[in-house]
Image (cartoon, rainbow, N blue to C red; front, side, top):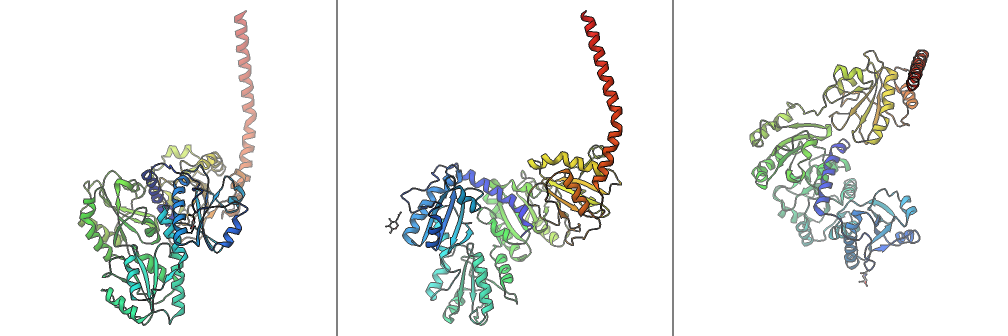
Length: 555
Ligand SMILES: *[C@@H]1O[C@H](CO)[C@@H](O)[C@H](O)[C@H]1NC(C)=O
């Protein structure tokens, strides 16, 4: 999941942008209607209110914020409907422009922030932002994580009600470890899926009349993921060890449909799965329909190896760029190996009308046989002239690993983004640092380098969480097996020349002291300086002479 973060955040951003455009500018009032059931909290009332109410949704907001205005009326509606149906669930608002200290204590960084406070315990709210969605989400929070249907009718009703994949445990009463593992998984995923437990023989029998592709015995704990309306394709847990990890992995693999669309509602599901994604970008419903059945078959065939998704390019087509494909040529098919951040695509120039099914199937088979070469996004390699002119060694997608793999050197790299202000600000210091070590010379022991991380694909042994990220690969350092690169040391001090030099001296394996190098350079410069001064003096004299000339002329 960790490696996902960078690439998936691109899609998340894309989806978020689209959703704002689709729903138009905010019109409502951020402050909920005072006649609604929303409770306004202040520093005086806050603590007591949370002590007295077991389940509260708290919105921390600012009256001027656009998203808060969008939410305000929906929030009031949700509060009113809960007041009718579940009066124990409260919705509260805290105006952070009036309650600055309270919001600071709560660590509020953006508006609106929503938190579920359940018996004093805080959790981030990650549910929908419309009235019905908010109310449903909160009702779910009030129910046990694992639901136990009372009788066959209740079981049938529950199954018919589901609109998303759900999970059923059968026969765990004799195995308390298994039951508590299930409870744990249910608690962690309750906002995404419903979890049921079935014990009674009558209910087990009922399940057997419903499920047509699996036989439920109920003798030992067994687990099923069911997609709504697909009782002929129930997925059964086949692992030997039952624990929270194996059950989580079963659930996150099986809740994904064989072929579904990736969009705002589903991308979290796909992000939760560690598998590569095979994308089919389409522009029309016909294009999607023509391939959907075959993709479902592929999804079934390659279950546990690749997730296949459709992507509506009229909405999210720009995502093609982040998987190194051309958004202008759709349909397209590409595979994103998200855990390793590698991208593979069917050649678009050779398939301007979109790839055929046959081509796609062959491509998938070749991918799994490890026969494909990833598409590496890279800027051009620097020319010899550019290398001489720039004290900082420029890394790009094509040379990054080759340079980092030279284990005889301490290599200090700045991973940056072109739009990042802090990166620009520190650029002159980075150049000075590179000059101190003579990094652009072949015999340099310390290589100070940089790379535009947004325009060059690199697979790193650590996660980039912001720009700039500064790391030092020490000479002969321990090698990370997955990437073949050395495990780096991350710099987190003040971005100043002295601090950088100290860092290299302390963490580099070669112990190069930049202060000594710099002192020598400064001394050499100072020795050269008197000559410069003489030259400067001469210039002044000349100017003075010219002035005299002018004066003479005037005379
Ligand atoms: C909440 O429900 C109670 C009981 O039905 C009702 O008396 C009250 O007016 C409701 N409050 C709001 C703000 O709707």
